[in-house]
Image 1 (cartoon, rainbow, N blue to C red):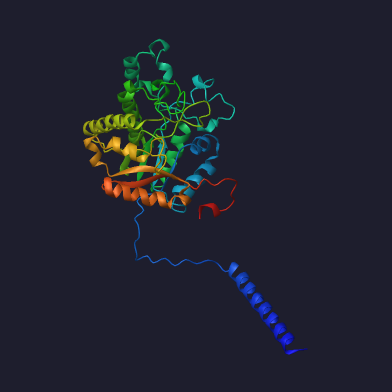
Image 2: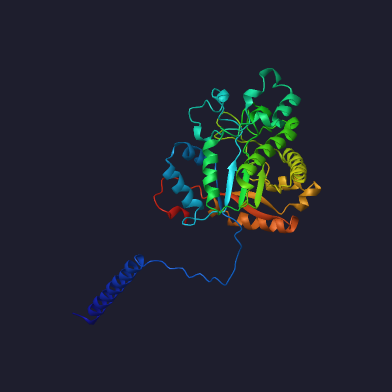
Length: 372
């Protein structure tokens, strides 16, 4: 063989050997457990809380799961042997689960998820049909605590709530409403008649605040005001106000608010909570405004529009932060940076709380892969 052929053959063998070695290294590394070194002396951020919502799986689990399964689920989330979550978000339903709405749109649609209908503590049957067009009569009914059923309503969620509190790890409870009670709405249901409808009637802003405070205070006195009371209790009256929340294909309770409408409601809520705290010695906080997105848009309302409307009120300077939802978070690094810069330049007193988070993955997952 010529020297050239021998050299080429040797080079080929060298390449094969190198490839085999690289493959063996890759194969070995693929099965070596990954280890991450954490320097506990270096602080990057402060995580003030981590929690979960009662909407809507606690409704099903509290009603249908065995006691053992329910206890195990709570332990996995809130217990010392689980994640030790310290925030519980309690959904104050708007009454979409009432039998009176069974035939109403969107609940009559075959595709509507029944588990997303929520009970209300307010007993709508106590308001005569003949009086439901009278705003003063309806408002008076909402202010009357005898029209609320705290013995039987929302029992499944209250059961799970009590179990979570019993772990001793919950330090904050947020009572949030996706929609006002349907007797206060333009559509007569817990979603708008059409997309983008400001569904809460302005004449019921005061009644809505009273309704929320009656419910929150009862749950507070029943579950939270003992010797081991939860230190922080917040009231969140709106949820993702910029989204449409209306029309025949709505999938859950929801209420749209234009920026000025939201700010007007927030002003009423702020005043009502301050008055309630002064009269009752409570320290309830107003939580605003569960923004459905942190993005900036060319069309429609975005988070800047709502902040601008809220900033017209003097009490806004006293807010310590805003609550936002961060969906598709893996694709939103630029949006997060832009929001933080915008707040630093315009509202430096505001911290940001991500009160809902999801990667929006599809499919079925049997491992923690999608959450890592």
